[in-house]
Length: 145
Image 1 (tube, rainbow, N blue to C red):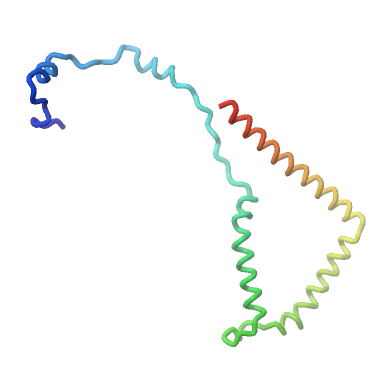
Image 2 (cartoon, rainbow, N blue to C red):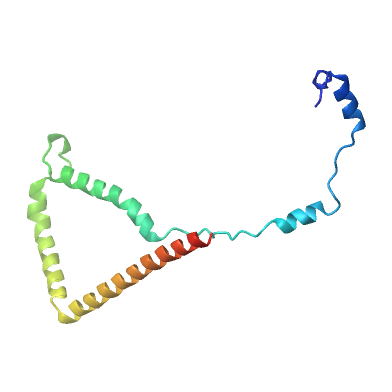
């Protein structure tokens, strides 16, 4: 709001403010401005792929596993409620050995080996294609803009 002390003190400015009409826009001003506005393509927001979530989650999971292994395999006196090294070597090691032997037998089959080779090479080609397509499409969009 204009207060009386905000008004100009000089006579010339007072006369000028009283006699000069306010400018008004032309009749089709808004239409001309709206025609001059160009449509900008919008980027659609998509959900993040699961790989991004796993990539951000992996360091925390690895840290928790390392801490649990260190605490679980130590024979600290204040952690007597956690079984020590002897429990792992006497009870869990035989089960781990049986599991690893079963996995070795599965992967020694030629059918599984060829399937893994084909799957690995196909997955590598798919990831390389995704990487190169995204890289070149990004470069192409920057050169257009």
